Image 1 (tube, helix red, strand yellow):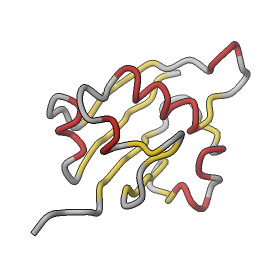
Image 2 (spheres, helix red, strand yellow):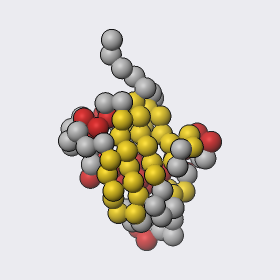
Image 3 (tube, rainbow, N blue to C red):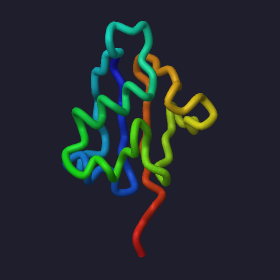
Image 4 (tube, rainbow, N blue to C red):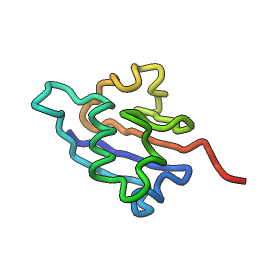
Length: 99
């Protein structure tokens, strides 16, 4: 499944300073659909190059990271159970900044 993943608010630094990634991710264990929980595990294994604890806590993103699927907050679509479709755009933005 082709997806576009965008990292902002400093999260791109965890991915070799690359903000936009066009990726191909397949559902786990031959599942019929790809859900956000599977995508996050894939991101941790394939894109996060350093300090994965700054991006994830357990199976989810850390508090303070906004997740948008096609410009819709994932909290409105089921969070970890959000079903992803071909060519979806998933954005991760850190809302926590030093000062």
